[in-house]
Length: 178
Ligand code: ADP
Ligand code: MG
Image (cartoon, rainbow, N blue to C red; front, side):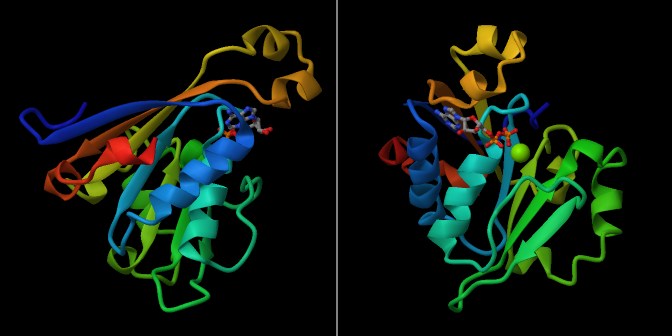
């Protein structure tokens, strides 16, 4: 549930390969600034971390962006004078925002770019304004169902929908990202 009446800006793009997903992240990073909240929704293997890897590259931050297996959040400081990237995997963050504030991240969220995988329904209260990105797997379900990890990881098409919520995103030309 997004707040009724909120300003929205939407755009859907097709992303054929993992490399294209990373490049989309690099382009999107060029639009991001301190205080931005990005929520990523999509099933396991959809490409949330791959997109975040591109964001990290585009923002010029330190450290490889990986799937945080044991940590809930990782802070990637900027290598220049830009904002740090705070990468959160909220999958196990049952309590939502309160738990995130308890993480003691040692960063100021308003001075960071915060990307939250599985954030939908958990961290919207952080800000009225957010970019919600939904990644859908168009094909490959059969390989996934068969448990063929190698085939499931092969390039196949994803549909990425950007939902810009709030004034912050109303004027961004999301179409130029595709
Ligand atoms: P998530 O974080 O959503 O669980 P990951 O980014 O960790 O997903 O994994 C996505 C997997 O799917 C990677 O193995 C990647 O190589 C593969 N893949 C195949 N096609 C694409 C695509 N078009 N976009 C993103 N990833 C893709
Ligand atoms: Mg992930």
